[in-house]
Length: 295
Image (cartoon, rainbow, N blue to C red; front, side, top):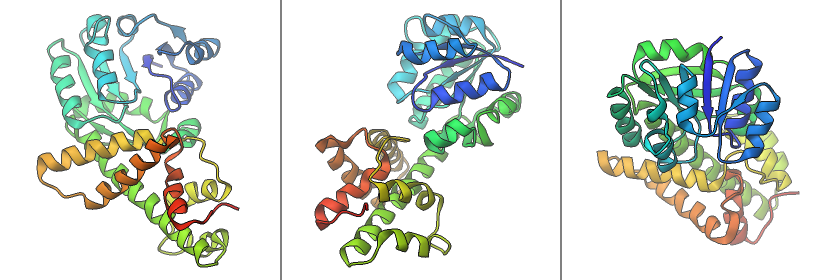
């Protein structure tokens, strides 16, 4: 069993950290909010006052934070991870951030004989809770081999996809597909409701065919109940699609569908829905069609 640090105990990070404790690892935790820290301490973890202190006590350190600036602050800021890192520390950043930021931080870490892997996840809160996340990892293969068994305590799969940055490029591809899929589902179910069909029966009829998908299986039941409690917030999907559009511009790869989806999500965010689950995108269609899909 490993001595692991975990920084960032939000919707995703808290259940992931719990799964590491359940697997028998020793855990040192830090987060901005005291509530999740106290919960993890009650479950057997040790609290640390800052990221530097976490790094001083562990051999593997996981970060799970909202965005690039948060990761940069935690790793290279005052009382940050690199101030306390010992030679040989492996940092596994499981946040979804810009690929270039991951590459920049990896270079800084290497100057201290520290290895950084970027290892974003897919699956949302339900899969974080049950430990079945899909994890995509970029960085040195030998470091990946060391941490893969630990990652599999949090996920159903952990795949090495290339050098540092490749993990987040893979995540951006994932978020493009998920975002467009949610939009397509929303568009279709709104059409069904507006045209007089029962959206629930439509879902039952199409889920076993080519239109079936994990998105349809996970998000349609929420939409049909009008339940937009976040497993993954709209504002975070906007962040990911912004990173995708920026990356696409850098490499001259067009993303017209993503550009349309982010426009719809930003509209919802501007009207107070930024903390809704991304399945709540259907509200954009409902408003314009003048119909409610939920029962």
